Structure formats: structure tokens, C-alpha cells
Length: 170
Image 1 (cartoon, rainbow, N blue to C red):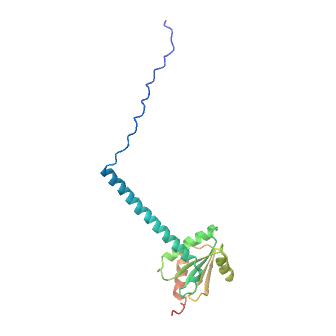
Image 2 (cartoon, helix red, strand yellow):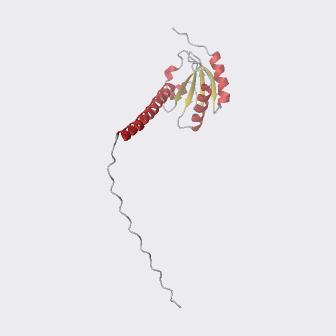
Image 3 (cartoon, rainbow, N blue to C red):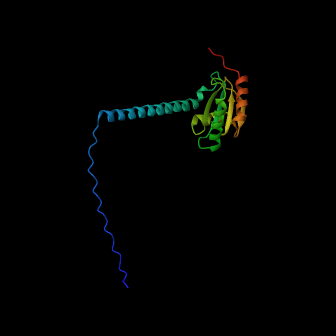
């Protein structure tokens, strides 16, 4: 009987050294391809920049409390940006306002984390998670406290826009 011997390990093939990288030749076609990709990227980034600037400008306008009482009825949200209920109310209020004509109502946010927003809220004895429906002269006509849905807010906003007296324009 033959004695079982140890299996000899197979020799491994030596790995081939990677071929040296040659500098890629930039021909006209490759250059035009890169220019096309760069152009598309520039347009995309420009669009994102435009949307970002538009969003920032809209946010600045929303926080401008001097817009209250300038002739148009206004929805003023007493808002704490760290409050999840305030953020949810803001989302619902914006959704309800988006169903209306753009010029029907102004939307202003009184951020209670700022001195101006806190002073406005204190003057009207309003706490966060509150919407004040203000007429064109700056007088509070209705107070909506607590979380509300767009289905509740839309009819309230429409009624406010219809009844709110507007300040005389010069």
C-alpha cells in the first residue's frame, strides 16, 4: 500500500506588475466632452444657487414684521424654530395659503427667539404654536391656537381675507 504523502502546494503564478500609466492624450473630442459635462454642471449649480437665493429671500420676507398693518390682511405665526409643533403648524399654514390667491393674505413669522418677535408675541399675549389673523390696519381679528391642519386653516384664512378691512392706500 502506498503511503499517502502530503500534497505539495501548487506554485502560484507571479502577479504581473501593473503596466505603467500613460498620460491620457487630450484630443479634441475628449476636450469637447469635458466642456459639455462642465457646462451641464455649471447650469445645474446655477439653478441650485438661484433656488437657494430665492428661498433665503422668501424667508427674510416672512420674518419682516414691518409688513403687518400695511394694507393687506396678514397671518402672523408666533413661532419657535426649536418647537416641532410650531414647525408642523408652519407647514400646514403654508399649505393652506398655497391654495389661495398669492395676494389674498400676507404670511409673517414672529420668531420668539428674536427680540422683535418676542416683543410682538408679548404685546398680543400670544404663545408659540399660535396664528394671529390680522387685518390690513394691524388689528388682531382672530387667534388660532395650537396645532391645526390645512383643512381647518384654509377656510379660516379664506374667511379672514374676505372680511378683513384693508388700510387705505395713498
